[in-house]
Image (cartoon, rainbow, N blue to C red; front, side):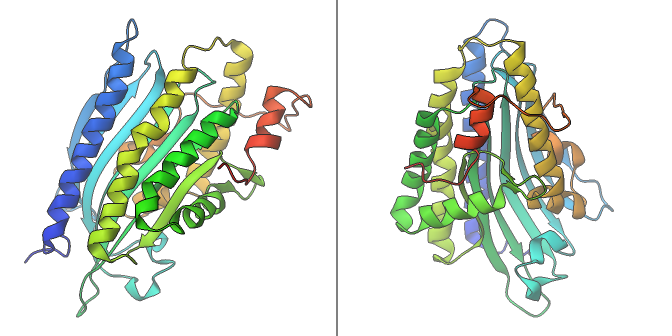
Length: 315
């Protein structure tokens, strides 16, 4: 019997698109590395869940480590199915609790070496669930967000304009709505801090219908390279020293805290029996914590908190 996703002819298109997106993005990152002496390449790690495990499926994890520009860059594709939606996926859809499900998506996090280049996250995904005796329900989620260590207005403005442009064909109301959603989601509640300068975030989205919702998802995925690469090119050659690297490691600690404590994607993967190595590819290679760190007023480090890690209109 066909599974809920396989029974829908549009799903093969979604899968093909996601695999193509992963290839395009990793090729672009490799091109940046290849232009540097000793630049690194992605390791391609294909995987398949063995019979008998709670979660079934396959994927391709691409990971680049110890590069000249990117200290760690992970970009994963997965297509999995399971007998029961985990709690992290049903908190807004209680009627689907316990339903078998399928999920596919591309997720990436890039941690650059230069502290003046921001970390970036992007995810696009599709989930379907089929409660007993009911038709399958499909929805989409994803977005992208930017986490600088040293703030630059023009970088934040460019990133947000790219996000706005990706959503504009599907309704002018979507960018402000998804921008607010991103600000609220990527928030460290235990710290009272934003994770970065935001971007867009959406989940449980199907209100445009299957075809248009899928088109919107693809528009977001297609906008990623134009949103991020110009920032990388602008900052990657800026000089830095141990002070900047130390601050970068300190702020990366906040990134780790968010992903482990608050991120629904991490929880979904771990709760559903996903592949830990792929789920945790978002972790930075180095991170640090300091007790009650206080940066001098007016310093670039203090300015990150007061001017950039706040909810504001970047357009």
